[in-house]
Amino acid sequence: MAKASSTLVLSIIFLVMFALVEQNMGCTATMGPCEKDKSCSATCRATFGDRANGFCDYSTSSSPGGECTCVYHCPPVVPHESHL
Image 1 (spheres, rainbow, N blue to C red):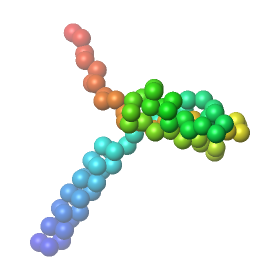
Image 2: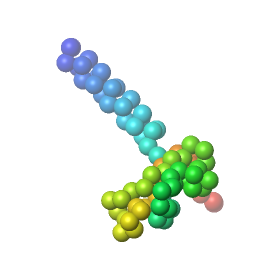
Image 3: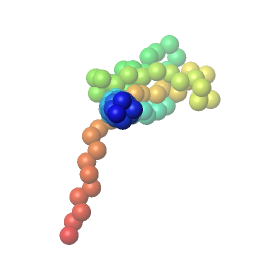
């Protein structure tokens, strides 16, 4: 009985953790090269809203200033309606 209840508890914990991780994942977009000595967060906020943040990603860009990468909340997914 103890093994069955511990398996149930672990399953519930796993499902709750999965739901929380999925809820907190954001979307990303690249906005071109970063301007020298400037933060690209302002560009990201102008494009994706006040809750967006930007950073210069030097790992994927051939530009010396890096690539401006925005992280923002994903828009809600609207299910495709079938038309009969």
